[in-house]
Length: 115
Length: 225
Image 1: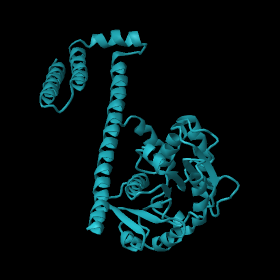
Image 2: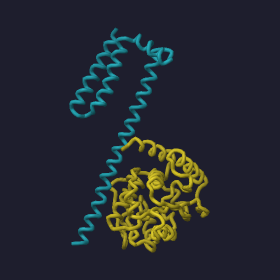
Image 3: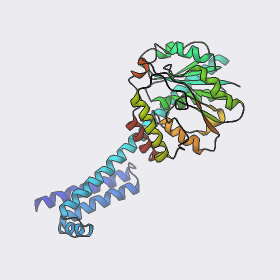
Image 4: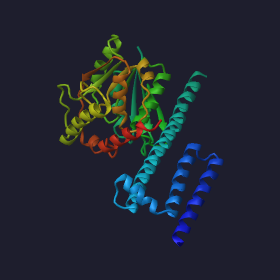
């Protein structure tokens, strides 16, 4: 079916970009592997949709589609949380720079007063 | 013993000169950190015995305190006193905070609004929020419930303690983080009653502690190295 072809092409593209970013040192090996598992998993499920029903039965979820939706929500929550942590790190880095610049004023005042 | 007061200030142009003059009766020097104010706070703070530093952008009370504490250590402080710029703190409490440090009985002395001295003008909502914050501090952060004030900004510490307490929170969450570090660091600490007076001006400030934001920053801070 056309939707399967489009989805698989999308996942292959995502996989290619992921490893390209790894080679460019944009992401770590662990991150590249994590994303790859997601894309390959998406590709396999696109080609074998019946597999979701089997997995849904294991997890005790009614339908395969429901399982995908639940998993998608959980993954999105995780990614948003990672963004928050990354944002906090950037904020702290900015604070550090602001503090260094501010403290350099004190050091320059000290030099002025001693000379 | 060289005592340096650290005063983080944000948009306090109108009050800061008088507040600093009142503090200078009890400390040797002051470090004011103008935390990216939009008004002339830095200019108003430039009086004798006051070192003024400026954050290029607003980074929060915790960040300003960290900058000021580092500066105070560089200036040779033996005791550092954290003070507010809005005139809520009573300067007469400073000698009481310093006394246990000077006598070698404590490394950190924290002010408390809940030790028999009733704060004047504190809104009832803030009173109950602080009570709730105390429970949160005990249950979520493991701060001993003997600590009566979860968010008081008036505290004094020795230089050794200031070097030990490596707090990271930039905003108002620094108060809880500091309490956690103080009570777990092996430093000798104690609380003493202090009198805080709330004015309409200080209560009307645009930047005020927000309980949910503090909880969120403490939570996200656990995952941020």
